[in-house]
Length: 299
Image (tube, rainbow, N blue to C red; front, side, top):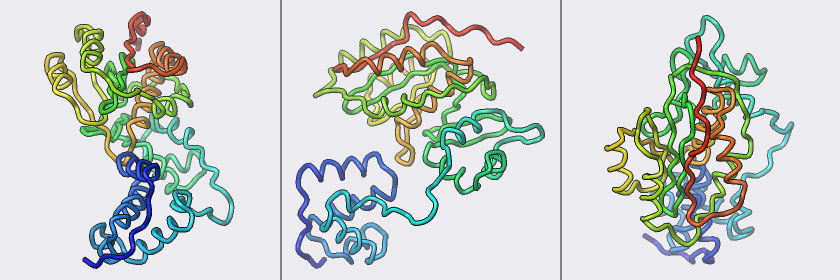
Protein backbone atom coordinates (compact mmCIF):
# COMPACT_ATOMS: atom_id res chain seq x y z
CA UNK A 1 0.00 0.00 0.00
CA UNK A 2 1.32 3.46 -0.90
CA UNK A 3 2.04 5.71 2.07
CA UNK A 4 1.13 9.41 1.92
CA UNK A 5 1.71 12.25 4.40
CA UNK A 6 -0.22 11.24 7.49
CA UNK A 7 -3.17 13.24 8.77
CA UNK A 8 -2.19 14.75 12.12
CA UNK A 9 -4.63 13.66 14.86
CA UNK A 10 -3.97 14.67 18.45
CA UNK A 11 -4.76 12.39 21.40
CA UNK A 12 -7.99 14.19 22.35
CA UNK A 13 -9.40 13.98 18.83
CA UNK A 14 -8.35 10.32 18.56
CA UNK A 15 -10.27 9.49 21.75
CA UNK A 16 -13.41 11.15 20.39
CA UNK A 17 -13.08 9.40 17.03
CA UNK A 18 -12.68 6.02 18.72
CA UNK A 19 -15.83 6.68 20.78
CA UNK A 20 -17.71 7.39 17.52
CA UNK A 21 -16.63 4.00 16.20
CA UNK A 22 -17.76 2.20 19.39
CA UNK A 23 -21.12 3.91 19.83
CA UNK A 24 -22.19 6.18 17.04
CA UNK A 25 -24.28 6.30 13.87
CA UNK A 26 -22.75 4.28 11.00
CA UNK A 27 -22.07 7.40 8.90
CA UNK A 28 -20.13 9.11 11.68
CA UNK A 29 -18.25 5.90 12.53
CA UNK A 30 -17.14 5.66 8.87
CA UNK A 31 -15.76 9.22 8.96
CA UNK A 32 -13.87 8.41 12.17
CA UNK A 33 -12.32 5.31 10.62
CA UNK A 34 -11.26 7.31 7.54
CA UNK A 35 -9.42 9.86 9.66
CA UNK A 36 -7.77 7.29 11.96
CA UNK A 37 -6.55 5.18 9.03
CA UNK A 38 -5.27 8.34 7.32
CA UNK A 39 -3.37 9.16 10.51
CA UNK A 40 -1.37 5.99 9.85
CA UNK A 41 -0.32 7.27 6.42
CA UNK A 42 -2.54 5.10 4.21
CA UNK A 43 -3.47 6.57 0.84
CA UNK A 44 -7.05 7.30 -0.20
CA UNK A 45 -7.27 4.22 -2.40
CA UNK A 46 -6.01 1.92 0.36
CA UNK A 47 -8.45 3.39 2.89
CA UNK A 48 -11.38 3.11 0.46
CA UNK A 49 -10.52 -0.54 -0.21
CA UNK A 50 -10.38 -1.32 3.51
CA UNK A 51 -13.66 0.42 4.32
CA UNK A 52 -15.64 -0.41 1.18
CA UNK A 53 -16.39 3.21 0.27
CA UNK A 54 -15.40 5.37 -2.69
CA UNK A 55 -12.00 7.03 -2.97
CA UNK A 56 -13.70 10.43 -3.29
CA UNK A 57 -15.47 9.84 0.06
CA UNK A 58 -12.09 9.30 1.72
CA UNK A 59 -10.56 12.37 0.06
CA UNK A 60 -13.52 14.58 1.04
CA UNK A 61 -13.71 13.64 4.73
CA UNK A 62 -9.94 13.65 5.14
CA UNK A 63 -9.81 17.13 3.63
CA UNK A 64 -12.62 18.40 5.85
CA UNK A 65 -10.85 17.12 8.97
CA UNK A 66 -7.58 18.78 7.94
CA UNK A 67 -9.43 22.06 7.38
CA UNK A 68 -11.72 22.17 10.44
CA UNK A 69 -10.89 19.31 12.80
CA UNK A 70 -13.76 17.36 14.37
CA UNK A 71 -16.28 20.06 13.44
CA UNK A 72 -15.45 19.39 9.79
CA UNK A 73 -16.82 15.85 10.17
CA UNK A 74 -20.30 17.10 11.07
CA UNK A 75 -23.13 16.98 8.55
CA UNK A 76 -23.35 20.16 6.51
CA UNK A 77 -26.53 22.21 7.11
CA UNK A 78 -29.21 21.43 4.56
CA UNK A 79 -31.03 24.07 2.60
CA UNK A 80 -34.78 24.42 2.62
CA UNK A 81 -37.31 24.07 5.40
CA UNK A 82 -35.89 22.61 8.64
CA UNK A 83 -37.24 19.23 9.73
CA UNK A 84 -40.40 19.36 11.84
CA UNK A 85 -40.69 15.68 12.77
CA UNK A 86 -41.34 15.17 16.48
CA UNK A 87 -39.46 11.96 17.28
CA UNK A 88 -41.18 11.71 20.67
CA UNK A 89 -44.58 11.79 18.95
CA UNK A 90 -43.51 8.98 16.60
CA UNK A 91 -42.30 6.83 19.53
CA UNK A 92 -45.40 7.59 21.62
CA UNK A 93 -47.74 6.62 18.76
CA UNK A 94 -45.79 3.42 18.09
CA UNK A 95 -46.11 2.48 21.77
CA UNK A 96 -49.90 2.62 21.51
CA UNK A 97 -52.01 -0.24 20.07
CA UNK A 98 -52.46 -0.03 16.28
CA UNK A 99 -55.87 1.06 14.92
CA UNK A 100 -58.66 -1.49 14.84
CA UNK A 101 -58.24 -3.83 11.91
CA UNK A 102 -54.44 -3.39 11.74
CA UNK A 103 -52.31 -6.26 13.06
CA UNK A 104 -49.24 -4.07 13.51
CA UNK A 105 -47.92 -0.59 12.95
CA UNK A 106 -46.32 0.19 9.60
CA UNK A 107 -44.36 3.31 8.71
CA UNK A 108 -47.14 4.40 6.36
CA UNK A 109 -49.80 3.92 9.03
CA UNK A 110 -47.92 6.01 11.62
CA UNK A 111 -47.09 8.61 8.95
CA UNK A 112 -50.75 8.96 7.96
CA UNK A 113 -51.84 9.49 11.57
CA UNK A 114 -49.14 12.08 12.29
CA UNK A 115 -49.18 13.82 8.92
CA UNK A 116 -45.52 13.18 8.11
CA UNK A 117 -43.66 11.04 5.58
CA UNK A 118 -43.21 7.30 6.05
CA UNK A 119 -39.47 7.83 5.45
CA UNK A 120 -39.38 10.10 8.53
CA UNK A 121 -41.10 7.41 10.62
CA UNK A 122 -38.65 4.77 9.38
CA UNK A 123 -35.71 7.01 10.31
CA UNK A 124 -37.00 7.43 13.90
CA UNK A 125 -37.58 3.67 14.23
CA UNK A 126 -34.05 2.89 12.99
CA UNK A 127 -32.38 5.50 15.19
CA UNK A 128 -34.13 4.22 18.31
CA UNK A 129 -34.08 0.51 17.57
CA UNK A 130 -37.87 0.04 17.33
CA UNK A 131 -39.32 -3.07 15.68
CA UNK A 132 -43.16 -3.18 15.67
CA UNK A 133 -44.46 -6.75 15.86
CA UNK A 134 -47.78 -8.49 15.42
CA UNK A 135 -50.84 -7.82 17.61
CA UNK A 136 -49.54 -4.42 18.75
CA UNK A 137 -46.37 -5.71 20.42
CA UNK A 138 -43.21 -3.66 20.21
CA UNK A 139 -39.66 -4.97 20.28
CA UNK A 140 -36.37 -3.21 20.85
CA UNK A 141 -33.68 -4.15 18.36
CA UNK A 142 -31.32 -5.76 20.85
CA UNK A 143 -29.80 -9.19 20.35
CA UNK A 144 -32.07 -11.10 20.80
CA UNK A 145 -35.03 -8.74 20.31
CA UNK A 146 -36.23 -7.29 23.61
CA UNK A 147 -39.98 -7.31 24.11
CA UNK A 148 -40.57 -3.77 25.32
CA UNK A 149 -43.68 -4.68 27.36
CA UNK A 150 -41.96 -4.51 30.75
CA UNK A 151 -43.62 -3.87 34.09
CA UNK A 152 -40.83 -2.32 36.08
CA UNK A 153 -37.20 -1.21 36.14
CA UNK A 154 -35.51 -3.21 38.91
CA UNK A 155 -31.90 -2.06 38.82
CA UNK A 156 -29.10 -0.25 36.99
CA UNK A 157 -25.36 -0.89 37.23
CA UNK A 158 -22.82 1.09 35.20
CA UNK A 159 -19.10 0.36 34.99
CA UNK A 160 -16.35 1.23 32.48
CA UNK A 161 -16.91 -1.96 30.46
CA UNK A 162 -20.50 -2.93 31.33
CA UNK A 163 -23.86 -1.22 31.67
CA UNK A 164 -26.67 -3.42 32.90
CA UNK A 165 -30.37 -2.50 33.15
CA UNK A 166 -32.52 -5.15 34.86
CA UNK A 167 -36.22 -5.19 33.97
CA UNK A 168 -39.24 -7.15 35.14
CA UNK A 169 -40.91 -8.59 32.05
CA UNK A 170 -44.59 -7.88 31.44
CA UNK A 171 -47.25 -9.27 29.16
CA UNK A 172 -46.56 -8.46 25.48
CA UNK A 173 -49.08 -6.19 23.84
CA UNK A 174 -50.54 -4.68 27.04
CA UNK A 175 -50.22 -0.90 26.77
CA UNK A 176 -51.41 1.85 29.09
CA UNK A 177 -50.96 5.60 29.20
CA UNK A 178 -47.68 6.73 27.65
CA UNK A 179 -45.43 8.83 29.89
CA UNK A 180 -42.61 10.96 28.48
CA UNK A 181 -39.37 10.78 30.40
CA UNK A 182 -37.64 13.15 28.01
CA UNK A 183 -34.44 13.65 30.04
CA UNK A 184 -33.85 10.05 31.06
CA UNK A 185 -32.07 9.05 27.83
CA UNK A 186 -29.57 11.90 28.16
CA UNK A 187 -28.88 10.99 31.79
CA UNK A 188 -28.28 7.36 30.89
CA UNK A 189 -25.91 8.42 28.12
CA UNK A 190 -23.98 10.76 30.41
CA UNK A 191 -23.34 8.28 33.23
CA UNK A 192 -19.84 8.84 34.61
CA UNK A 193 -18.51 5.69 36.24
CA UNK A 194 -15.24 7.18 37.43
CA UNK A 195 -11.81 5.56 37.09
CA UNK A 196 -12.99 1.99 37.61
CA UNK A 197 -15.60 -0.37 38.94
CA UNK A 198 -14.50 -3.08 41.37
CA UNK A 199 -15.83 -6.63 40.73
CA UNK A 200 -17.20 -6.60 44.28
CA UNK A 201 -19.52 -3.71 43.33
CA UNK A 202 -21.08 -5.79 40.55
CA UNK A 203 -21.44 -8.77 42.90
CA UNK A 204 -23.16 -6.59 45.51
CA UNK A 205 -25.52 -5.21 42.86
CA UNK A 206 -26.57 -8.67 41.65
CA UNK A 207 -27.06 -9.88 45.22
CA UNK A 208 -29.14 -6.78 45.99
CA UNK A 209 -31.64 -7.76 43.31
CA UNK A 210 -32.64 -10.75 45.43
CA UNK A 211 -34.29 -13.93 44.18
CA UNK A 212 -36.07 -14.20 40.89
CA UNK A 213 -39.77 -14.56 41.67
CA UNK A 214 -40.77 -12.90 38.41
CA UNK A 215 -39.58 -13.08 34.82
CA UNK A 216 -36.63 -10.77 34.27
CA UNK A 217 -34.77 -9.35 31.30
CA UNK A 218 -31.40 -7.60 31.35
CA UNK A 219 -30.22 -5.10 28.74
CA UNK A 220 -26.41 -4.91 28.61
CA UNK A 221 -23.68 -3.10 26.76
CA UNK A 222 -20.03 -4.01 26.53
CA UNK A 223 -18.49 -7.38 27.31
CA UNK A 224 -20.74 -9.42 29.61
CA UNK A 225 -18.57 -10.75 32.49
CA UNK A 226 -18.82 -14.33 33.79
CA UNK A 227 -20.47 -13.10 37.01
CA UNK A 228 -23.43 -11.74 35.03
CA UNK A 229 -23.66 -14.84 32.84
CA UNK A 230 -23.73 -17.06 35.94
CA UNK A 231 -26.34 -14.84 37.62
CA UNK A 232 -28.52 -14.91 34.48
CA UNK A 233 -28.40 -18.71 34.31
CA UNK A 234 -29.17 -19.11 38.02
CA UNK A 235 -32.07 -16.65 37.96
CA UNK A 236 -33.39 -17.62 34.50
CA UNK A 237 -32.78 -14.10 33.19
CA UNK A 238 -32.66 -13.44 29.43
CA UNK A 239 -29.70 -11.24 28.49
CA UNK A 240 -30.10 -8.74 25.64
CA UNK A 241 -27.16 -6.82 24.17
CA UNK A 242 -27.45 -3.45 22.44
CA UNK A 243 -26.29 -3.33 18.80
CA UNK A 244 -24.07 -0.61 17.36
CA UNK A 245 -26.93 0.82 15.27
CA UNK A 246 -28.96 1.78 18.36
CA UNK A 247 -26.98 2.91 21.38
CA UNK A 248 -27.48 1.35 24.79
CA UNK A 249 -28.75 4.63 26.23
CA UNK A 250 -31.48 4.90 23.59
CA UNK A 251 -32.66 1.33 24.10
CA UNK A 252 -32.52 1.68 27.89
CA UNK A 253 -34.47 4.93 27.70
CA UNK A 254 -37.19 3.28 25.59
CA UNK A 255 -37.37 0.28 27.90
CA UNK A 256 -37.96 2.65 30.82
CA UNK A 257 -40.59 4.61 28.89
CA UNK A 258 -42.32 1.34 28.03
CA UNK A 259 -42.30 0.33 31.70
CA UNK A 260 -43.98 3.63 32.57
CA UNK A 261 -46.50 3.21 29.76
CA UNK A 262 -47.49 -0.29 30.85
CA UNK A 263 -48.76 0.96 34.20
CA UNK A 264 -49.58 4.58 33.49
CA UNK A 265 -46.38 5.65 35.25
CA UNK A 266 -44.05 3.19 36.97
CA UNK A 267 -42.64 4.32 40.36
CA UNK A 268 -39.29 2.64 39.72
CA UNK A 269 -38.81 4.73 36.56
CA UNK A 270 -39.43 7.95 38.46
CA UNK A 271 -37.08 6.81 41.24
CA UNK A 272 -34.35 5.95 38.73
CA UNK A 273 -34.73 9.33 37.03
CA UNK A 274 -34.41 11.10 40.38
CA UNK A 275 -31.38 8.98 41.31
CA UNK A 276 -29.57 9.84 38.07
CA UNK A 277 -30.26 13.53 38.58
CA UNK A 278 -28.68 13.56 42.04
CA UNK A 279 -25.08 13.66 40.81
CA UNK A 280 -22.29 11.22 39.86
CA UNK A 281 -21.53 8.07 41.82
CA UNK A 282 -18.42 5.89 41.55
CA UNK A 283 -19.36 3.21 40.77
CA UNK A 284 -23.02 3.68 39.93
CA UNK A 285 -25.38 0.95 41.14
CA UNK A 286 -29.09 1.35 41.85
CA UNK A 287 -31.68 -1.20 42.93
CA UNK A 288 -35.38 -0.33 43.05
CA UNK A 289 -35.85 -1.53 46.59
CA UNK A 290 -38.50 0.43 48.43
CA UNK A 291 -40.56 1.08 45.29
CA UNK A 292 -44.13 -0.04 45.74
CA UNK A 293 -44.87 -2.91 43.34
CA UNK A 294 -47.22 -2.01 40.49
CA UNK A 295 -50.88 -2.88 41.01
CA UNK A 296 -52.24 -6.07 39.40
CA UNK A 297 -53.70 -5.80 35.93
CA UNK A 298 -57.42 -5.75 35.51
CA UNK A 299 -59.50 -6.60 32.49
